[in-house]
Length: 474
Image (cartoon, rainbow, N blue to C red; front, top):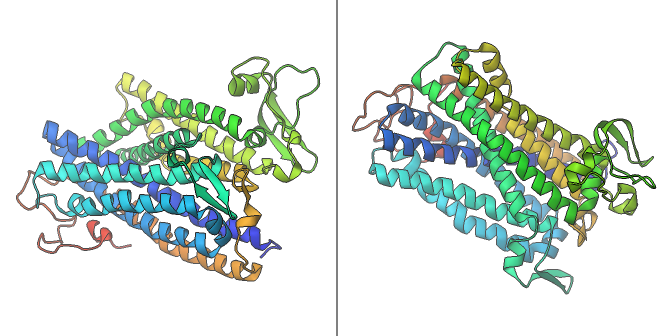
């Protein structure tokens, strides 16, 4: 396929499947916590608008959760099929961490998911709220274990290599490795931000259509408050994460900045806003830079210096051309999110939050920006780690299975076709659900467990997550 090697194809295949998978857990984390907040507000205020919003977003949550499980299973199998030498080498660490995720988070989510989705009036309000909280907690615990595993691959510690295999000797050091707190905070906040943008875009879209109801206003207002508060927090977390990366993965930072060398006698180094890193020439061409700003951001000093990419062996350099741009896409989207939050505050101050069509259109356009920023950040993190699969310990080329380029080309083609059919359909269905909008379910009834079309009797107990969503023709 296009002259690519088996290693390149294995990396592309894993990157493709993970790119699909990472979207769904991120939205699941955000929506689960959002549902817990909505139900808590309903129990506290008795305002039926919060209950109606809960019932509406729980349908999108159910579909998203199901697609996350399916895509995660496919990704997990690739550790054995495409990366068997990595699994054999590092499985003593990554295997137990993934098992802990299943034994704690997945069982917690699965145990209470049915109650949260289908037990609205089959259990008391207190127990139902507890179930929702447990589902939200499960998503956060799941993220904790997954990011502990990934962070160990980025900044490994707490292990020894015995007979050619990784053996954990200190699990606390394995789990709480140097980059773990920053990655966990960065990813969790990114999930909340991506969800707030999705909810905000939905509210803005319905407001533009003239559906200026209490339910739509509440969900839009909550989303804008979340963006306003969380966007600057995420920027600060990202700065701290960058400083941690500079300490433990300096080559990644040099590649991200397109910084090749420190000129003799120069004080500080510039921030390159735009340019084209040329790996062959070892320089960044066509660059637009701001003097000393790179020093201020990365060292917090006017004349600070970092190692240039040319100081590292050629075999240990990440592809600066890729991570230079994926990082700037992530940061650029983050700045637009901050702009959206500040604009919403101005509109709220003017009393025009729900009526400014220009602002509402911008909120709609920003809907997918959170997930796009997550993808750009993930690509920056993983491509910037190359050529290591376990940083400084095992090279990616040493972890790949012995498959032919032909076999990987065929399976990659099948993945691409099937993923776009299956998950494309799922995403389209989610958008159809969002287009319906939150409905007024009326006063509390003894048996309100019906879908929006009113066609699902209470006694028909659905057994699949997708059954929690109404039957909408697509």
